[in-house]
Amino acid sequence: MDKSTVTKLISDDGIRCDGRKVDEIRPIKFQLGVLKNTDGSAYVEWGRTKILVGVMGPRESHPKHLALADRARIDAFYRMASFSVEEWKSPAPSRREVELSKVIREALQPAVFVEYFPRTSIDIFIEVLQADGSTRCASISAASLALVDAGIPMRDLVSSIAVGKVEGKLVLDVQDKEDKAGESDMPMAYMPTKNAVTLLQMDGQITYEEFQQSMEMLKKGCLEVYKKQREAIESHFKVVEPASEEA
Amino acid sequence: MSERIVPLVRKKQIIELSDSGKRTDGRSLTDYRKITIQTGVIEKADGSSIAMIGDTRVAAGVKFEIGDPFPDIPNEGVMQVGAEFVPFASPDFEPGKPDEVAVELARVVDRGLRESKMIDTSKLCIVPGKKVWIVHVDVYILDHCGNLIDTAALAALTALLTSTMPDACLEGDEVKLTGKRLPMPICDLPVNVTLAKIGDKLFVDPSFEEEEVLDCRISVAFKENGMLCAMQKGESGYLTVEEVLRAVEIAKDKSQELRKKVTEAINVAK
Image (cartoon, rainbow over all chains, first blue to last red; front, side):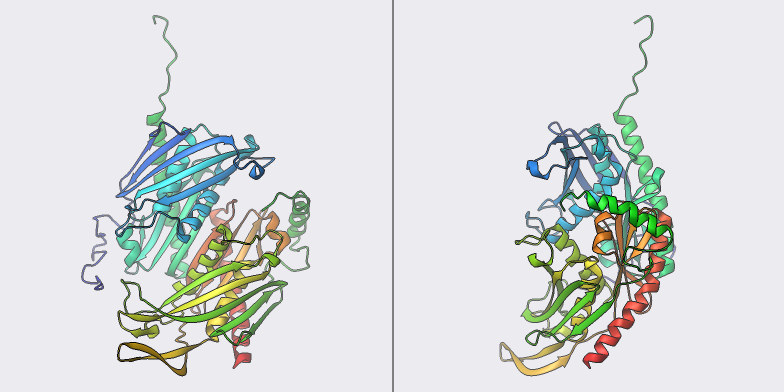
């Protein structure tokens, strides 16, 4: 494959290949309650990334010996559909999917009041239908909405976004093209009202100063995602006005 | 990991001690345990090492194999890290396929080495577009007494640094080994530093006892020039943004100490 250095990913006036500014996130659309057979569900379109999340539980633990005496056990299953990427992907879980399932679970766990549901299981099933970068961030953000939809009490929403380094510049919310050609990728998940970083990963090369700058950008980005999550919740759950006297 | 009551009692003690900057094994919060690295321990491997941090012991072996390149990088060799958790290393390890803990460890160690670009993979090409060297770096956890990630990263790094690679050439349509050995195309010396958060304190190089009660951990890998090349938060707790910044600062400082240990170990090997 030829190195696509011909097409620049960021123009001289700081506009990215999809028209965004360096600190601009893609259009994000969250929707709650999209599946009929789950306890809670959510769908997200994050640019061209499309993900469905279903939550089952709290329910009886299976197998039983895995149940925890003092809290609910959370499990996350991050899977990519075979048609979600450029080339056909084997549906069997890869090492990447195993790792992502683990870090996604660990990113959501601090938000859930697991101690309210001892001996039960909460299973979070994530199906990436189309992957165009930042799938773990979109998964976490959508999964926390699915947990809300399931009526599971939470300390806060978990919001997530990534900062990448592309052609020497730090950019917010990396899409696939930027991720593949970029110099680094750093996703973070965050509970804004708790100032709690629940997921943090990085690969690629950045200086210590760029790392500090990235943390600032990530915090701001997560707040933007948080706003969109709240909007989705508010539009899903109607506020019921008390019945008037004439009715 | 199975539920344990005793660690929760110990947690209180660990936190109380840490308020005066102490730890149950006498270290300060930023001390590593004793680090020993032995290289060249497996003659049949192309490179090998046994690294110990405290009583945690990890063996790493490097093996070269002729294979096909990835289609998007046809002229570059491939490095891949695998991890095996040997059942005698801990009563919690079970025989069988690597579980998510093993997969995460392998991938964290892999990213630290890979993203630093420590190996010039273009030098691992035998026949452009057709045959390249696949470098298998496999770490075997032999004794688990805390901080597997740093110990495994040290073992993998020193095994690679002390490796030599076979020389191959094309004879007609066949790739033949010449029997000569070539030096490894090494460009960097990345090290990984892990800290645990317990209560509101950060503990460098968590021991087994500390790992049992930690809220979460953060691992950061640094290149020789001080740049970050990989990072991973793990386990189910959280860090505040300020704690993340502090952890990376401490890790940056400690990375130089680790690198010194590595340099000493390879100088002994030479």
